Image (cartoon, rainbow, N blue to C red; front, side):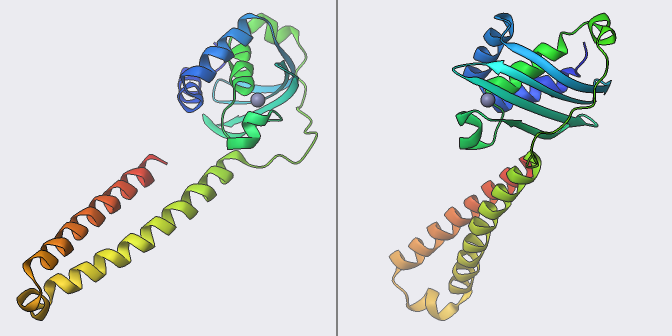
Length: 188
Ligand SMILES: [Zn+2]
């Protein structure tokens, strides 16, 4: 296979079940036309293709050292969420099944970029980091505030039992939110 199976697994996971099913169908229905590609090995390649969906869409995929460096499509789905759409996935699936002979018979052509592609990984990281930073600083401030109140003996002694209990519950909730944020950060 021309494409490392981990790359395909990850793309399918990112695309989700419904897009994956559609991409498989597109591939079977010969809707993908590989236009240009540069191929080194299953972990390093660059493909541009045309995929016939409700319109004809241009796809572009760049993989370096097994990582998706860039992936774009000019379909509405891609513009809505900057993720793997059925066209880009169908492109990789189609290309992965090229036989060695098919590949060698075609002259290797350098993929010529028609436009300046936005780096996919960069977009995802920017969005995630901004979102996580917002959550993080807000939650951290709350944990600090709760910790201060709960360690203040004046508050503990004078405040009604219900108020102390409420503060403890808040603290627990914020701690869980922080842990959740950390888990999400680790998944990036
Ligand atoms: Zn698309």
